[in-house]
Length: 338
Ligand code: KG4
Ligand code: ZN
Image 1 (cartoon, rainbow, N blue to C red):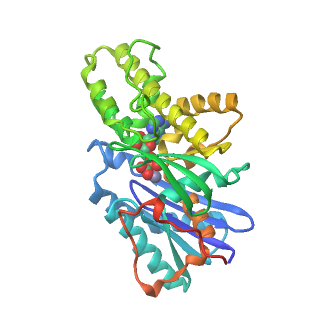
Image 2: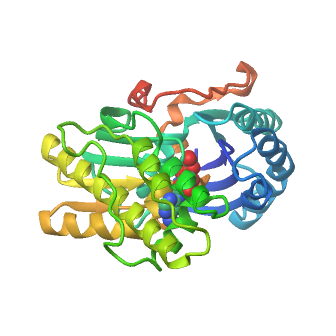
Image 3: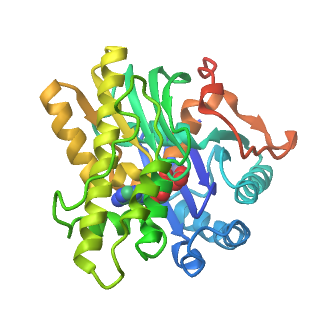
């Protein structure tokens, strides 16, 4: 096998990539549905599914042309977790195309994609490492001893970090998707005008809870016309979140004794988080690894990479269409030897 076509459709981004096992990533195409969902203030699952249908063939043609290949040797697609309709579109498309090409399919786990996204960078982390996975749907701290050897250290008991960013942004009247918008507003804010709790940092453990923080923000919301106060509040919210994440990462490093930290998922694109963790890791002599910003948020390059790592799990398209909206990262096992 030399080339893998990756397909990502778990939420509101349609991604297609071609990865070559010798030459690395050959091409990557992405269509973001932001404009489609913005007027509704959040992702509308049915609209997401329909738009994946609309975009996939064009993106595949584009990615193949950019890679300079006519087809791939295998197709890896996101089988879960995610929105069931959106996943089904990717799964059905991948399986249909694999039938036409007479190649196999590899159903891959979306969060394993995020986890391994830093492997696409020029200096990838070696195992073992601690991974902080922060996306719109998940907040996980994981001890990673190798591929498929994942131990859960902590997770969010309620809202995911990305969700907390999105909901807080909405309260501030910012358009969807809130995370990057809130981060931009926070950059205009002054320090120490507001102070919010660092949830669950005063007790042992590495679990998170962000719903109380959201409530704390709601109770202090300035009037819409006070632009400076809103920026100050966004700043304080971002400080509370990045502080909390840094404290829990520090605990995870201490508990595991590992000397490498990987941060991935949409919120990993947050510059303040990168800065906070960067300072802490430099002080402690801990290696810090991020995917490039574009590979923090959803993309198909990371899914194609997982497909390569899990090539032994390829199946015949005739076996049927497989997708699962609920799928824990901890259920994964190490890949079979090839
Ligand atoms: O990983 P991702 O693209 O999709 C999921 O798998 O959920 O993550 C999307 C999440 C959204 O909640 C979005 O608001 C957040 O990541 N996000 C950010 C930033 N960029 C994306 N949050 C804070 N700061 C950012 N710069
Ligand atoms: Zn994601």
